[in-house]
Structures are given as C-alpha cells and as structure tokens.
Image (cartoon, rainbow, N blue to C red; front, side, top):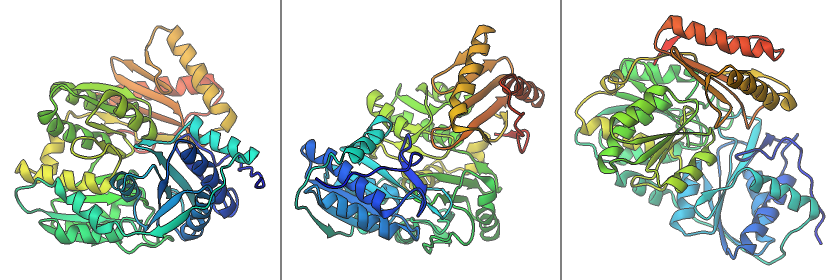
Length: 467
C-alpha cells in the first residue's frame, strides 16, 4: 500500500483545491490529488482524463506530479498543456474523457495555485472534494499501470469558439489577457474573428507584471479603458488569470458589470428559448432578475459559486446563468461551462448584429445605485456564525429575507446582502437601492446588524455607484 497523505487543512475548498505554493500546496499534494481523484474515476469505470495548466510559474511542476498520480491508478492521461481553464473543459467534452483536471490559481496572487476538477460533464465540489482528502489519509488508492500523451487542442478550441459568432458588421475591440493563460488562444481567435483587434498583455507571464488578472476589480481595468479611448474601440474585454471570468468596458470607458452582461445576454437567449429559466447568484442586481422577467424568462436566484451554478443549470435545463463575479455560463449553443473567451465572442456578436453600441445597451438597463462587493476579514470559525446570528435577528423582525446563500434582505429601499465566503476567511456585503438616500439607509441597517454581532462596521469603498 502506498504511503498515506494529509493535506493542509486550508486547501480543500468548496469549489476547488487552492493554496500557497511551497507552504500549503506542494507537488506531493498534487500527486495525492491525482491518486485520489484518479481512484474515483477508475471506480466509476473511467479510462481517460484530460489535464491542463495555466501560466503560473509553479504550474508545470504541479502538473507533472498530478499526472504521475493519475497514471499510477491505471488511467490514460491526455495532457493538453498550457492554456485557459475553459480549454480544458472543452477538451474533456470534445474527447469524451471521463474527467478533466486543471492546474490553476485562477485570479489569486502569483504565489497561489490550485486544482479545478470535472467528473463527466459536471463540476467536482463540496463533499466530493473533502472525500479526496479522506481517501488520501487512508491511502485508499487504486493501483495500475496507466499512460499519458501530449495533445494539442488549441486550433480545435478556437474553431469551436468562432462557430457561434453571429455578428453582421465589423467592430473594433480591445482585449486584455492580463498576462494570464488565455494569451495564445486570444491571438489565434482574434486572427480569425471579424473586425479590428487591439491586444494587451497577451504574453503569458506568471509574474503578472502589468496588473493583477481580476477583471471584476475596476482598478485592474485601467489599461483596458485607456486602450479603448486611445484606439477608438467599440468594446473592451478583459479576462482573469485562467480565462473563465470576463470583464467588459463600453466605448465611453464605463464598466459593464457581470450581472449587466447577463441581462444583455438573457434578452438575446430568451428569443430562442422563450420562458426559459435564467439563473444568477445572490449578489446580482435586482435589475437583472427584473430584466429576465421582462423578456419572458423565469429568473432564479441561486447560491454564489461557479460549481453550484453549473449544477443548478444542469438540474433546471437553464440555457444561461451568471455571477456578479464574471463567471457566465452558456448552455445555449455551448456546453454550460464558464468560458470568458466564448462570452467575449458572444458579446461582440450581440453588439454587432443589433447595430447598436454596448453603451446604448447598458443605458437601456434600469439605473440602480449600489455598493461594490465589500469583503472584510473575519476569523474562519466565526464567519458562518455571524451570518446565522444576523439571519435570526432579521427574520424575527419580520423582514423579507432570502437565505439561499447567506442573508439577502429586501426593503422598500432595495436590498442588502451578507454572506460568508466559501473560499476565504471573509464576509461579503453588498447593498443596492433605487436612490442614494435609500442606499445609505440599507448600509446603515447592515452595519447595525454587524455591530450587534460584535463586529466593526465595514467601509463601503466607492459609496454609491450607479449601475
């Protein structure tokens, strides 16, 4: 029997495996994940697994160890090499592999890395991830003589990305890959996509020398805004480190946030899927849910987390889902996974065929005043307890509460949200209103609840941005 392995207690997360390289995440951990996950695949009758990795400096070494672990269980491993996470999802579906694994630190700082997994066509999350740790601690692993081979799916992936482009006029687009794993695919994609294209930071560099690759933080979009202005672009599109989250800028230099993008996509998708369920997470604007209903769809509010939304999509047959964080999932014409490159192609096509501007589409959405997503640190063991305390108090007061994921309280002014992050030792707060005065009242109500639980009041940076 192989020697058992114990993971650092912080790395097995709700949606993936993630840690600081050399401290909480090592090649030995990746090897053990390969053995445990490989065992799960083998016991389900699987034979083949696809593996990919992002542009982080530590990724090749972790990929080597992961493949070694998978091969030791008797599996055949298709190594697709360096690229964005959605290319791994695509390869797994395209090659009809039993599972897929991606070495990626997503949008975390450069010293982090992690592992995302899919089994069959669905995500691996929650209890399934914890079970890998249990198996490793017992060395409950299958033994076999597997094999591996390197394959190149880049051109096939780009061809599939382009297949659903439905634009009718050429646009000028600025793209910011953020030195993340999407760079090479972006070059190949824009070489074939109609229109003119300005590429920023498309060289893959795990040091992320220009800005942090997280397009949901407006400070990371400064270069993209500048490029849109300087080159007279119609749209700016940015990606996170592993290419599964999108950010967008209109020609006026304004951010079009994740929930606003979902609203625009939903209006289009519902034309061919009338009455369909469209899903968004609890952090999304009420305007999004209202827009879905306005266009004849069935809006469904669900828990935050890419794995949870994918699972809910499969359950409900939804053609579209999205998060405030820029994870957007098309099952309409696509495979139901989050792919920022694909979302970019669909956005360019949408603006092009409607013969309008992204700014005009954005202006057509209801104006709301809201806070940014505000995160504040709290002890890991205290975060869920605080949410439960707040929930108890607001329910006792007779307030209108949605507790599908944390506490979302709706009042005549709008709504406020408090939830515990599943990936970090933070609480997440957000509020949205129809007026600046209403927003202040909502923020006050939220702060009052936090103080009642013995916490300091959060600082809502940016106060009240309209969106």
